[in-house]
Length: 314
Ligand code: CP
Image (spheres, helix red, strand yellow):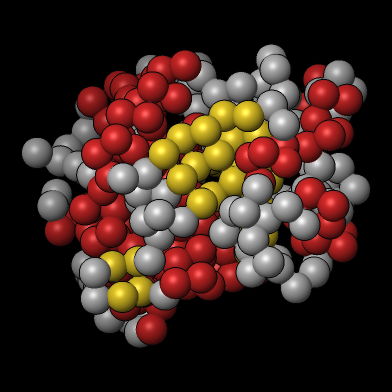
C-alpha cells in the first residue's frame, strides 16, 4: 500500500528513527541515494506562501535524481477550477510523488485517497510534519548526536512557547512524542492544543517513554528544557487578525529572561520566517543558543530522506 506523510504520526516511532538516520547519511553524502533517477518528476504544489519549503524540496528532488515541478496554487485553484479528486487523478498519473502546502487537512487527505503515489504534507492549517522532522534532526545533531541506537532524542525535553493551537504545536506534540521526548507546550488559555491531538500525543508518549505537558506558565514549559522553540503568533491565513493576536502572546515571547529557565546548553529553534521583537528577540535568535540556520538547512536533508523512504515503499 502506498505510504504518505499527511501528519506526523503517519510514521511509527521506529520509522521516524529510520528517516532521521537516513537524513544523517544524506547530510554526510548528499548524492548517496538517487531514487528519482530518470529523472522522475515530483509535483510540489503551494496554495500558501513559502521560501524554505519550495527551496528545500526543489533542491532535494534534484539531488535525488529527479525533476521538481512547482505548481502555483493560485493558478491551479485546486477545488475551485476542478475538484481535488480530479486534480489528483491528473497529477498522480504523471509524477512519482506529490508534495502539497495547503489549507485544510481534509484537502490533503482527499488528494492521498485518489492517487497511488506518496503524498507529503508541506504544511496545512493543522500540521507541519516536515518541519518537525527537521527540528528533531537538528536537536539530535546539536545535543546528543546519532548513536548506533538512532538519534539521541528519547528522554530529552522539548519546549514550545506561543500559539499552542497552531500547526507547529500540533506537530511538535505528535513528532516529539514519537521520538520519546518530554514535550512541553507553553500557551495562553484560548490558544491551547486541540484535544484530539493532545490525546493522541499522550497515547503515543505512553508507548515511547515520552511525556506531554501543557502549561499556561511559559516558565513551567521551558524549565530545564534541552530545546526551546517558538513560531509566529500570526500563522498563514490569520493575517487579518494580527492586532488581536498579539496581546495574549506577549508573556510567551522567547527572550533571554525566559530562555534562562531552560538547560544551560539548550538550543533555540524557530521554523522561520521570524519576527524579531514579537515572538522572539533578536538577542535570542541571533545569539549563541540559536540553531535556526542549521534547522533551515536540515529541511533539505530530512525531506530527501523522507522522499527516498516513501519511494522505497511505493
Ligand atoms: N518554515 C517554513 O515552512 O518556511 P516557508 O514557509 O518559507 O516554506
